[in-house]
Length: 163
Picture (tube, rainbow, N blue to C red):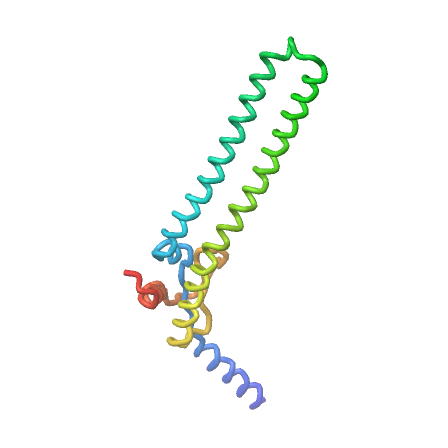
């Protein structure tokens, strides 16, 4: 019986020594100056791909309009060649569109990975310095209930040099 009380007391003591904190990582990342630069670079990259897509689409529309105005006077061999050309160009546009979407996603990961790592490292450093047992991310919205905990946002912002 004494052993049970000792273990229960030890567990109670251990539970009392746990220190909890929370931070909204989405807000933190939005405040980081690197995020604005990444957003700008991402927008510029996306615009360059959109411009290329517009050029390809304009070329397709011009060739289609030319084909439609001359189709009645074309010989069958020329008509078949023009139709194949339009089909190939349409396929290239579809392929480009898919590749561009993948490329935009890859660029986003490339630009934001160092930012996410920097934020994560700062959060971990604060947790270590201030002896937190757990830090919860409130931006995820999965904690349905929690005992009061420390909001470490100001400490992390200071660590990152954000005012």
